[in-house]
Length: 154
Image (cartoon, rainbow, N blue to C red; front, top):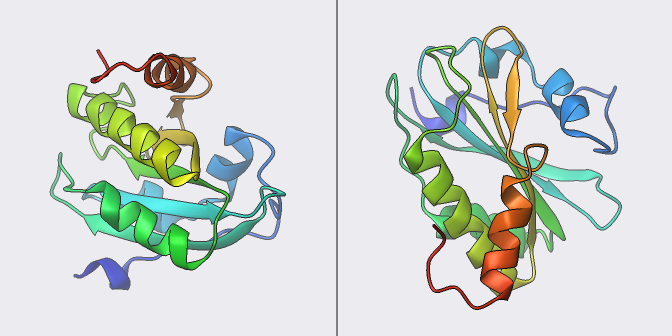
């Protein structure tokens, strides 16, 4: 099944993204019940209203290959002000992996250069539990390191 066959759909209950929980609550079962790792993006306007959304990558049981250019290509086309990254962990463990953290840091850095803010990176599971990089303060730490001129995020 290709990436286009699996879709992230937002419910009308969250027309403006005001919290990570709002977005998690609006993701349909196709995402959280998927047996493979899905990596999706929600593109937002300046009022945090979803403009578009898509699945960027459908991976294996425990991995998904994503590159910043795939995330930001549509963000540029849509003139998105910001993005929220969402992916599932079919294992049920919502703890971010080293790869999740490294990718998030790359996306924060790329977004900063492009003027498209990464508002959050959410990891969800089938029990609707989630890990929020913004909620845990990790995004802010990454942004501060980048602002200080750090070449790489540690």
